[in-house]
Image (cartoon, rainbow, N blue to C red; front, side, top):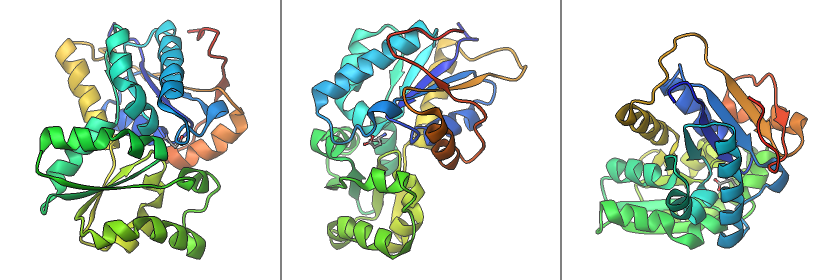
Length: 271
Ligand code: DGL
């Protein structure tokens, strides 16, 4: 069991921010990353569809022999984590609870902002997760339709980006939040602009670090950490165009991705 890979998936390349953090905290672990780029974006889809996608992908990764799955996508986590945990017999972790925990730890005035896709915000998943940890926290959320697409198009700096993001953040600045959850895998790439608009006293929180810490905890508690110390294998799979994944993925991952394999979810993963 300990040599099996950790499965990580997202609607595309955004979850590579989480995969990168897992690799940092667990440098000996094998990793199998799947980006469902053929069906990106997830954020405008309904909960039932996201549940179906999640079940398809977790089944696929399980056939690939993973020892646990990280749903490194806020939209899929908010729609499908509970159902997937109830259905599958391997540990499954989402990114909502880790992000909520990081925010509750970071806030001083207990006024927390959340930005995310329409699917994530309308699910109320972050609100529930935060209130489980601090029932008195005040939550202000804002859906940002199309913002993940802008990031994919490279619009992360400049006047247009500032204007669009400024519009989305206006109500959160007015609400006086001191902590803002970047509740979408793509938004850490906008943290420069978002930080400037929110002001230096507002802490920006993303789930990646906390999620990776939880992965480590789960594997440690179960005695499933990889024992071999030779170089681990990191594989990157995409349901869509490999070259687009390679180009975009390197930006999210912060290091070069050498090879991407195109897969069909109906088939298995050849180990
Ligand atoms: N991974 C998605 C999320 O975190 C990115 C946006 C999308 O697919 O719409 O919600």
